[in-house]
Length: 162
Length: 284
Image 1: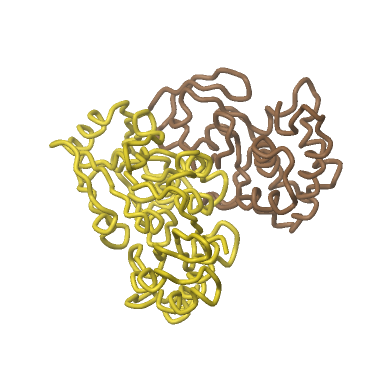
Image 2: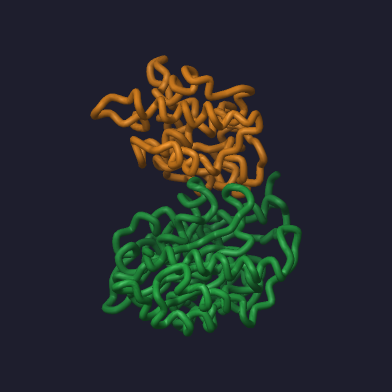
């Protein structure tokens, strides 16, 4: 076992984990953060996307021990004081989900995308989400949601920022 | 899917990493960003007894200038390669190729050095490094040595890195002001390329003076399209001007046949993609 200490959704946690434990397993099974889902488990689908030190990663393709000393944000840490994050709002507003399975990953990747590029074109949104699969084929409304979030962010405020 | 059990060390210096490697030999696997290694471990295609994580060695990150060369730390991420100003200015091709690796999430973790050391014939960074005549700096117990890209890539998943050695940095001769393009052909998003072409050219007033072209997934390792390069010298930087040179891109290659396409298809693809890559690189 290896001891790790990290910040998850603003809370400092310390645990003993097996080196082979994946970050997504750690989040779900040790911390109960089941908002982050396991989709393909082969680092293709992006459903397990979280932020590691502010950048999107596929948490099924990171070891928990690699996150030692770092900061993780999951879909459960996006809303503040019961107020949905602007990107979450946008997905609700534009029907950016059907079954909802890909949604946590889609939203986390969209937040990263808007952090880097606050006013993306439709093409840039599609490219930026290429690592996230939606099997309801709901890409249209997902793209609309990201563009909506970008459009409705305040002049000085980036939609991705929190 | 969960990897088989392994021990784990995360040394903070290259010396400590090397001694862990010497101590464990064959039973150890080196991890950089882990974006290729972890899927392999999860599918249990490999089950090392110990994983040596280089992620805590800060000296392996970053890009600096050293005279006529750019020196890129092996653990520099693809995402950093895309945005780094020095890479943009002096080795644009690396930036263009890095932007095409997998997807955004993978680019945030995957590294230039890790990708080259993994030596997947469909990997995007190998051909870009080969086209630029990069030199791979490899550390071992007896010090460091430098291996040119043409000798670094040996075969399928095989490089010149010895069993007790670690790739520490990649030195790239500056090609300041050269245009560049990485043309990648895939069937679905963020897939491995069926074929890809890395091209960088020095062009002015519509004429190419020098070109460097390398091919991805046209054999068991990255390949230079030398006949094309020779024929491009003095060519007009237009579709028609580069067509005859690009038609020679697959010369001397023996690409694999698989479910994505047979060997002849890949050869044809190489000529088409080379034409597109060179024209785009020349900014025509």
